[in-house]
Length: 224
Image 1 (cartoon, rainbow, N blue to C red):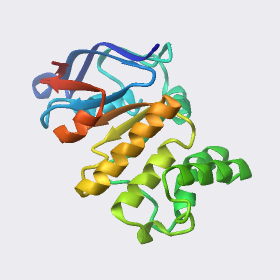
Image 2 (cartoon, one colour):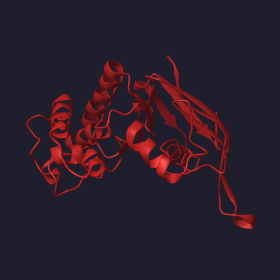
Image 3 (tube, rainbow, N blue to C red):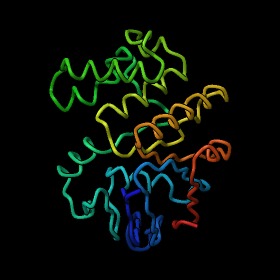
């Protein structure tokens, strides 16, 4: 495996002066291509902040953030946006589907926004992904017509739309029943094995973490 992501001495402090609150305190972490890793830690440990920085949605106060051998710490907002759209996918606890859009429209939305329109190639890719996640017969259903587990599978397909090297998932099974959660994790594991897409999954559920091949624990702003 090759190194996909590396952070060195990562520090994130919110506020200044007497109100400064350190959240990440010199955190070091490496993720390899094709990893399926769980990110664990109590509330307030820095997990969400770390995910936000890894997703290039926020810059650290200091330290270095590398992905695909590119130093993202020094990149400007435009460069970060382009990098994020090309290389990183997101799956959230609350799937954030557009309720008035069909499953297919939700999946191709990231590409449609980037291109300024829907393309035949994007629709073909979206159909392929929905087939892959077991929703080939639900493509034209509105998001409001889908179950919780189906919505999360649409969210996974959307995260894969631009063929990212890394998918960051924040409590992706948190609102699902046990059976649906297991199905979602089985799907993530299958995609990880077959396509070597790397997944970093933030979770409080030890049973979900055990499905992952690596467990990373964040304690008091650093990797324990």
